[in-house]
Length: 172
Image (cartoon, rainbow, N blue to C red; front, side):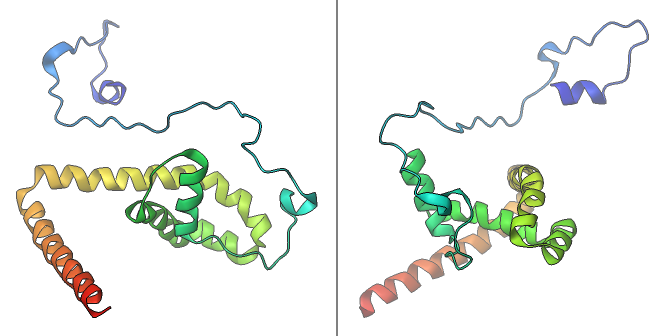
């Protein structure tokens, strides 16, 4: 509603627009972000062991893979993210790697010095990815030709994937 108000012409008498039932809502998205207590109970966290737990660990630490990230989030926060949810994080990583400012910062800094720059931009990367997915959704719901092309493509992809999985299963 607040975005709509900014698009309406300003009234000279200073009164506000009364929109009421004049706006037709076509799409509404309700999303649960999280649920649960934020209080820490004894035994929830592992004890700290020396300086390696505060970010000064060995340079050869293993890199976190997306599946490991999903497993960690599921265990720690009680979520049930799956392989498909990994794509969201992969999309954010791809968008970040394509960002000129982040590329420049990564090329001239150590990872430790790059981290604050990346953290500053991470929220906007999440929002951009969410908005990008919302754009696709809106286009799918409003353009029959667009949806037809996507339907056909996904039908073929899913059909082939299922048959390939079945073939692997029967070979073993």
